[in-house]
Amino acid sequence: MNNAEIAEVFSQIATLLEIKGENPFRVRSYRRASETIANLTEDLSAIRERGELRGIPGIGAAIAGKIEELLDTGKCAQHQELLREIPETVFEMLEVQGVGPKTVKLLWEKLGIATVESLEEAARGGLLRDLPGLGEKTEQEILRGIQRLREYGERTNLGAAWVLARGIMDHLRECAPVERMEPAGSLRRMKETIGDIDILVTSQRPEEVMECFVKMDCVAQVLAHGPTKSSVLTTEGVQADLRVVAPESWGAALQYFTGSKQHNVHLRDLAVRAGFKLNEYGVFRVKGKREERVGGEREEEMYQALGLEWMPPELREDTGEIEAAREGRLPRLVELSDIKGDLQMHSEWSDGHNTLIEMARAAKALGYRYIAVTDHSVSEVQANGMSVERLRARAAEIEKARKAVPGIAILNAAEVDIKGDGSLDYPDEVLAELDFVLASVHSGFKATRDAMTRRIVKALENPHVDALAHPTGRLIGRREPYEVDMEAVLEAAARLGVAVEINAHPDRLDLKDVHARRAKELGVKILINTDAHSADQLSLMHFGVATARRGWLEAADILNTLPLARFKRSLRRARPGRKRRRRG
DNA sequence: GCCGTTTTCGGCCCGACTGTTTTCAGTCG
Image (tube, rainbow, N blue to C red):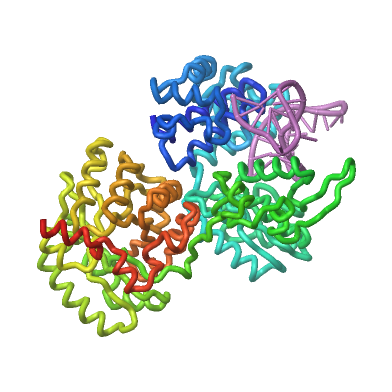
């Protein structure tokens, strides 16, 4: 079993214990373990080999034993036992807004309801209103929740949420008396998917801000409309929450609503131990019964009171950032302004919409010093992949573009398919003509994990390959990543000096944050590229930078933060090993 | 179930909102 599967088992155990009404602290232990495991950069099996399971924070004797059980047998007796008591289908019931563990317990015990379908039927039949603690309004709310779940599913891609949030904020700035305004929540942390959009503002006239917010064109339904908090469902099906806070609580509220939940829980635990209290209004020193407010206007104050440095939102997942802050060893995360070039983009020569010159001009306008134009290779028929002849014809056009757009280096490059057997889509002598070779998988996604791993590692062993693009092939929300042993791929990349891409397109974000962090640990050099298929998509770079930041990466970990000459020297092709191998 | 230079037992984050209530439980973030 892999880490994600084991994390899922513990998450289910936590939920099932919660439904049973078990000790909430025991529930939390399983939930915390689940989240910690999901964010680990290394496989549990490897950690176990070294006998270090107990060293993972939140993993004690009991859970370590269950991890071993899961690794050995693929099952966990306690989990199986719980599932015999409560059917697995209750998990989807919990996705309905307003339905929590207590309600599920009630529905299951009193009415034998364990699926969303039977819940809907019972609500329509008016059977819920007679249950203790439930009433007619709750019944209607559950029906609405089911409809919303069916219509829109759960989470939104970061890219779509970003556009929507920008739109809302631009609108509020125009029509309402807002002072400070920032997105909070998972959007501010730049998570790859967003549950709902949180926006925080300060204003002298909150009612007007709320009024403007609930009357936006993009509002499909007003879910709540109060003086300090309003929630709407947008026409895109994304929930957006707006909160107005007092200026003196701005920092406290921003910290609080940015989360993550685990980060906040950990932080407040520290606060209590140090004699402080944190909430969305400020940080307070607790003296017996009295509380003295010691900060809250600026976010920094919330951390400083606990002896911690302020930390970027992208780090706030409780995966070691609090310990790092305490010890003064937070990374200096890479920033968009560090990026000097973009090494994956497509032109009209394959499936892009713009000419070479248009792409170069757009990249230059963003301040880049170099780009690689990586049109597709011959096998990508549907993407107008280039034959060797067209590739050579394009080389002449690139030469012209270099003259037409001075001040930016244009690398003659290609995104070359890794074929089913791990060979590349152009012969070696053709690859040798290129300035930069990016390899990637576009077919055979259903291969076994072993086969896919061998295929990719073999491709990386080709000395002409400089970098691996979108290493798992996933499309967030649409296509699962193919099965591959990422640890083996990253180890091969580190050994061979091949760079690995963080694809910045918000549908991909591939490498994802956790893998990027692992890549750094293994000494793999990273590229952040947009994979732009039009000039305007070059601006998606910041999503890739955010993913790198979530992986704790600094500018020095990323090749395309280097000036051109050093960038070229850092590519695998500049390494002496490559020449030796070629002669041999 | 986890954890500890104030503890190996006794703690474990905090508040708002809603609906069903008569003082509070459940959900959410």
